[in-house]
Image 1 (tube, rainbow, N blue to C red):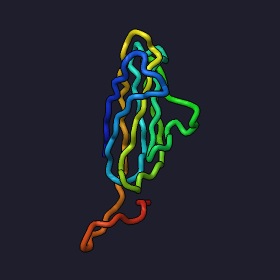
Image 2 (image 1 turned 180 degrees about the vertical axis):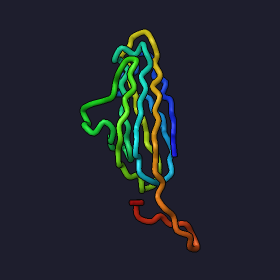
Image 3 (image 1 turned 90 degrees about the vertical axis):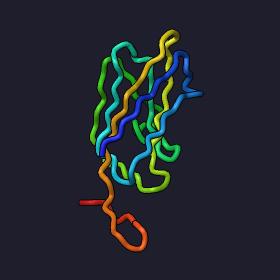
Image 4 (image 1 turned 180 degrees about the horizontal axis):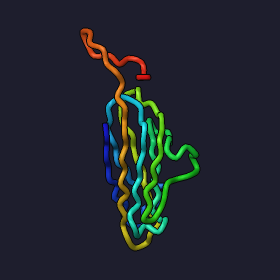
Length: 126
């Protein structure tokens, strides 16, 4: 499954008060992450992705993604198996004059399900 979000970040948005977008996903494994920073960002727009308030991308908690006319893409194997099934993208913008939008795409491999009196989620697929 493919999920998409856009995070518009106003000018002068400090890291201490980031804006956010929640991406609700099916339980499963995030297998690919793409972040597009269109031309004009000049490295002033920053984003991080969190799961249950813990920064997961980039893995280094003191770092963030940024760019200018740049697509960041990487393969991953991150399991999202606890409610709520969502990732939160936080962003800030050091640009004094312009707002910027970052585009986020996620590929998620769903968990297999078994039918009983209710739906339960089994182990991750091979």
